[in-house]
Structures are given as C-alpha cells and as structure tokens.
Image (cartoon, rainbow, N blue to C red; front, side, top):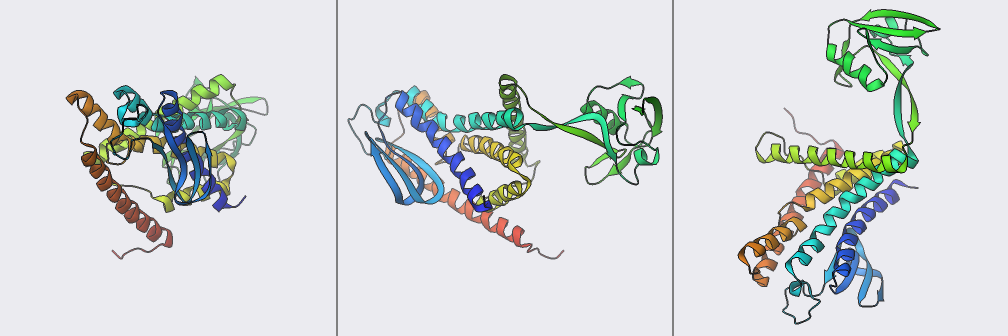
Length: 344
C-alpha cells in the first residue's frame, strides 16, 4: 500500500470517527441530522437514507455533521439543534472530541493486544562497540540479575538504575554461561539517546496483553498523552515553552515515516494524532467544538442564548483565523521539508 493511500486512510479515519461522535449522539437525543459528510466542496458520491444525506466530498481536509437549525435560521422544528435542551446540545458537541479520545484508547489497545509491542528483557542481545559493557567482556546471552547488588527483574529497572548513576561506577551482576559474575562499569554519555549508558542492547519479544488489560493500558497511554498535551499548552500560554505547531504537511510527513517503519508505527501515530485532534478541538477557539461548548456554558450561566447572527459571526472569524493559521504552519512545514534555512 502506497504512502499516499495510508495518509488518506489515517486522515479519513480520524475525521470520520470525530463526526461519527456528533452524529450518533444527535441521533440518540432525537435531533434531526440533515447531512453526514466527509470532505468539503462538491460531492463525489452521496446517498440519502431516511432524513439524512451521506456524502463523500472532493476536498479531503475535514468533514461535518449538519444538524437542523445550526445555520442560525429560526425554525419551529422541535428536533432542530437550537430548540433542544441545553444539556442535549452540550453532549452532542462534546461527543466529537470524546470519540477521538476513545479512538486513541482503542488503537493503543490494538497495539498492546493483537499487534503486540516490543518488550525488552534482562537478557543481553548484544553490546555497543567502544562502550563499557563490551570492554568488560559481557557477551550476548548473558542475563542481568542485579544492579549495585539489588536484584532486578525487568529492563526498565535496569535502565533506571544505570542512567541514575550518571558518571559514577555501577556494579552489574550477570549470569553468563552458567557463571555468576559482577563487573564494575562507568556509564558514558550517549548523545543519541541523551542518557548515560553502558552500551547494552536487550533481547526483545512481542508482548500481547489480554483484551481487558490492553484496553486499560490504552487508556493509561491516552491519559499520559493528555497530561503531556496540557503541560505543553500551559507552558506555551505562560511563555515558558516554544510555539510549535504541525500542519497537514508535517502530519502527512510523520505518517509517511511511520509507513516506512511498518504498521505498528502507523497505528501508534494514528492513536497519538486522534488524541491530539480531540484535545485540540476542546480549545475555546471560535469554530472549534471547544468554542461552542464555551458558548453553551455561557448560555447556562446567563439563562439565554447568544444572538444567532452574532454567534455565526464569531465562528466565521474563527474559521478565517484557522485557515490563516493552517496556511502559515503549512508554509513552515514545507520550508522545513525542503531544508530552506536562513544564515546565522
């Protein structure tokens, strides 16, 4: 499968799943769904089932669910979006971003379960030339049983104890050819991994978790991403972090690199992108779901809705802002891709 096809499939999955959240929740609370569309512009294919038009449109850079009454035109239809209770409108808007977070959990669960993830053991697969482990005569097949006289049962513990020593000597106990021996090694800084290491490469295997545990691990990974995303956003807002955004070109490049590695990496990238899409949509930027949620919250406090024309103007300004932002970020991505840099 070509890289272009994989990129289109990943983008399509993330968008379709997001809009599916709005669609399913709107149907669940009895709203009239007029259209479920993937893409913008003229329709490549469309079909009407019941009251809803399902369309695939020519520009594959988004999608939408058109609910009755969302354009701001007054209507007496009791199933129209503006005429539904506040809580129903809120959950319909919230369902899109939540579906992206759910998709991230499911994709990570697929990685941890059926696909499997590389898991490192305490058995040594090899050593790096020029590093202390090779110089000490440690050979492939040896098993690490202790670090600084403290027993170890997993690779993460080995890494944590070695890197934590920095340049101080570390005593490594291994069982090699049935013989237990202890060697003293001084970790060296490795700029590639940005850590102090002794040059040991662990033996790995594919770890497949049971379905329930895979879902739990998927939820943990998604929660970790959410926390990291919130931390980065806080740093950006407070001026403590760099302004770093990636547009469609940069995302496509990331998916392309993942495709070259294999399906494991593609699913991993898709999960991370889905979580980021859901979280980004929760930002209170006009035209995003977060802005609509903010206005609905304001309506709940004020006990009256914002004027429809004024709300549409807010979303239109936000739409233009996002288009300009995407344009700027895309130009930055292209310049970075082509390797065009200024002199210093």
